[in-house]
Length: 110
Length: 116
Image (cartoon, rainbow over all chains, first blue to last red; front, side, top):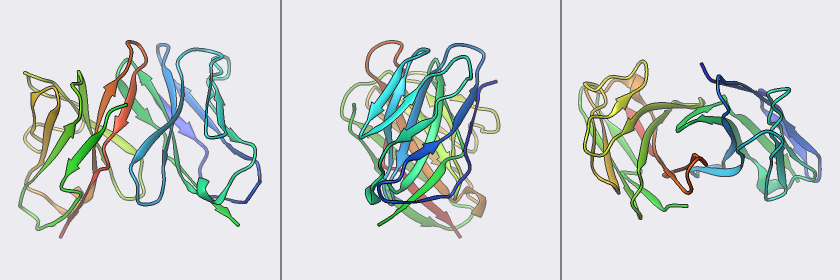
């Protein structure tokens, strides 16, 4: 079956630091890959996505590249801000079913 | 994207009772889903709400415990029946919109349920 494994947290960073959250997946087909973000007290928001191999999703300074050869979709941001403090979920969609990773809590200190 | 609302936003219920959660979308969508997010955990798909037919449940979830209605393309309800403290979770509905093959899902704000 499909599954997503992401880096365990929590992750604590200083402002302007580089952020990487690792995500690998197992899928039988050719899934679409997503990163969702949950800010404190808010609902789940789609951050970025990639639908095929070598696609790069990007939004709000975050990027992730769909790597079929390593079955990975790592999230990166070059310079984080305090407002990036949130829980980040990697997910895959095989047809319409979403499978989520465990989530990584990121805290950015001023 | 779609604008999704849920009612109630939160509730505290006694064990043995039932709660019905409503999900309303501002546009017609084909696919609607219900998820559970237990405290400190990730999201788990409960079921797919099918318009005009019975919901499709994931392994570990049954209709008697989580009956779902989907009377039209903009509305769905999830009932959590005969609640126990283990049902304390955030329940989220989501919809799939956009172009074919993109499989983007957008989530409602969630219903935070506490069972005492």
